[in-house]
Image (cartoon, rainbow, N blue to C red):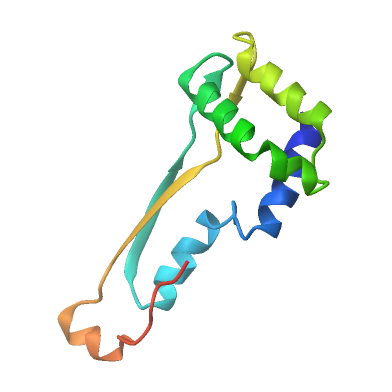
Length: 121
């Protein structure tokens, strides 16, 4: 399974997908001058045969050609992963879904906030 995820992450990085982006959100809000920054991250725990596993199966099936042609994964690894997704005794978790929040500074402090800054992902 580790080989599958290593290949998946290499493939995703080459396509501009950043699974580490959640770690950058709070510093980005701070750079915009926001205060009282906080947040949370959650992940779903699921087993094979569940709705999450079906989602993963559909995703991997749709992307299979590109995954294999990239050289990051092969058919054996893809088939192994799909087999796990169908096995109700297999348990795993999703990526972390991160939400952050912050507050604008008090009105008397807003003059120092750079209003031209843009939050880009």
